[in-house]
Length: 157
Image 1 (tube, helix red, strand yellow):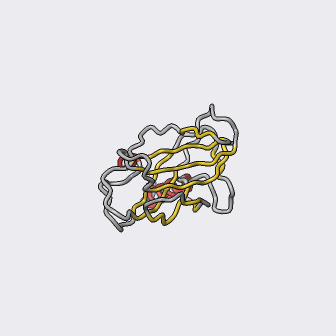
Image 2 (cartoon, helix red, strand yellow):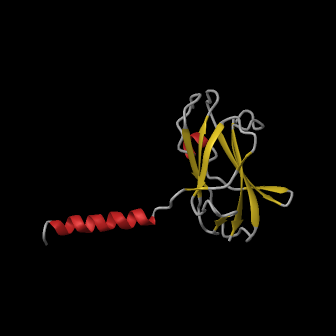
Image 3 (cartoon, one colour):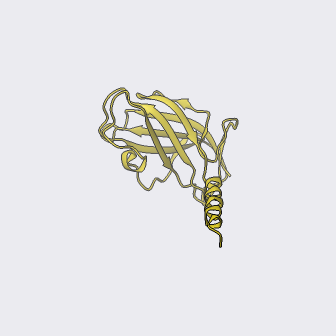
């Protein structure tokens, strides 16, 4: 085997891996009175031209929120709920500690940009339905405080 063949095989493997990676795309969202400055919201499995993010049952879409805290924050907790009609149904998160599960290093400093990122499992048992998703990052000791609060539309397909 020539010395260039292993290099070529490695490049092909890396290209294939890169093509298989999910890419984040900007999504349409509403800020629901966040204390933090929300800079952007992105998701996998969703496009910026789509009104609703199509989340397939059995998938694990990932959300990424860029934000700047307006004060020092010691801890954050994640809460994700789907609004079905007038009822809120919680999405199951394996770990709701936003500092560990959301790729953040707490404490967070005032004015610094952070990128929170976490996935949520769309279970096969979920019905095919349109939902409003409420994604919150809150102080675990004051659940009414909305450090980061976003709303976006999705559909379970």
